[in-house]
Amino acid sequence: MTTTWRGFASDNYAGVHPEVMAAMERVNADHQVSYGDDDVTARLRDVIRDLFGSRAEVFPVFNGTGANVVALQALTHRWESVICPASAHVNADEGGAPEVMAGLKLWTIPTPDGRLSTDLLDTEAWGFGVVHRSQPGVMSVTQSTEYGTTYAPDELGRLAEHARSRGLRVHVDGARLANAAVSLGCTLAEAATGADVVSLGGTKNGGMLSEAIVVLNPDAAQGVDFLRKTSMQLASKMRFISAQLLALFEGDLWQRNAAHANAMARRLAERVGELEAVRITQPVQANAVFAVLPAGMTIRLQQEHRFYTWNEHTGEVRWMCSWDTTEQDVDAFADAIAAAQP
Image (cartoon, rainbow, N blue to C red; front, side, top):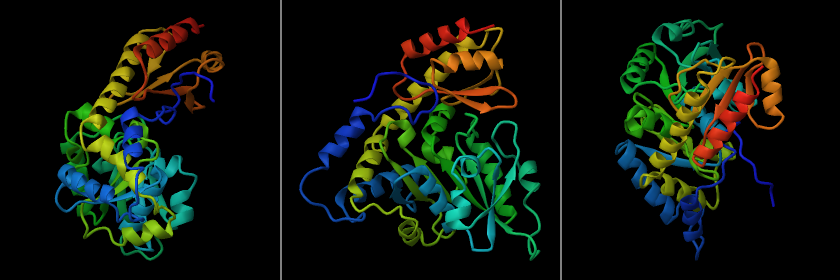
């Protein structure tokens, strides 16, 4: 048994939503064909097409890193590279998996808020046809970003259109796509406007291991089914992953969970935003709050509360809220932050 405590370090710290757990229990009966040829995964395909369009294909995988690596492999040729923000998860938080597993060069671009723009994209979208330069083939953006910011659908659409004009295909890392869609008041498909492939996340929004690659443009991504196997992301008992995704996306659970997490982040920002020692650094558009604290204050807080220092140089920290964060959790943490001020 684990001890009981609450943290703001990651939305991965939260447990599994009871409706997701119940969905796995329901499919834990009789026999089903393995490797995705089961009734549950077939139903998931229908649901994903309802959400993303009739051409959409879904490929459940074990984790977000696997979803991103397989998706980027499917979108690139061996001589091509990926343009992404320097803060992107594929660059900063996947242990070099795109490089090690897929052999991909990442052209990274520093961004103040985690978002690419057309002008920023053009700083690396060049050198086409030059044999000495890894050829840019894909733009990868995150929705919502690692800074908790979002792209409005029309903004993302313009960026994707510009990327295509430069000959690039478009990948959206949607580990927190649900949080972005709820924040923007749009559908999941609109939150991924312009994407050829989406890494659709469920684990951070109440799942246990519930991630998927969603191919929106089959002409742009080839061989996902084979790459999933060679990348060790093909589940034999796939119905248990598919059941989680169905629990989240067949109804409105994805919206309820994301809306609650977002609301808790806003509550936290409102509670601490006026404290003299706290400077919130990013718009609170999803379920993350970024702030700069004095170093001594951060050390004192981390002795009792779990959260990450995002930037050791500036003192910026990250506080994440999840589907099961309560108002009491937020208020207790906000009181602790206030008490820790110099």
